[in-house]
Length: 156
Image (cartoon, rainbow, N blue to C red):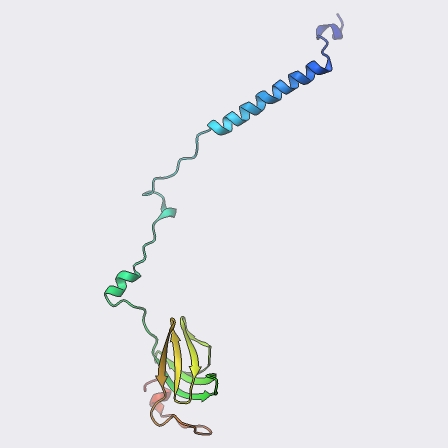
């Protein structure tokens, strides 16, 4: 018996038909496995630490006077420009007196909004407040004006 007599002879159309049936069977099996596979189970909400609810307590805190703390600013001197620009010597929360330009940040959420001859305007979280110069410091005085040691230390 020869090797060619053991296997039946198959013509090309029959071979292609068999290959197509095998490909369809494999495709149906793969898609069936994908569609019928069990899904990954999710943890119950009580056990899922990544989904912990975030509660905003700010409205409740405001009921009891828990508003954001205001920054205390004391003005020690100004160099005012006509357009609200300029610079000011300020003490922030009782700290040492430092120079700030208009628009510069004094603390998180607090900026020096503008500078006038008699006062500075501070923007604290969207609320603009006026901080007046100490008595005897306002006006159109040319040159340097001496400041009392109490004002320089931040205690008006």
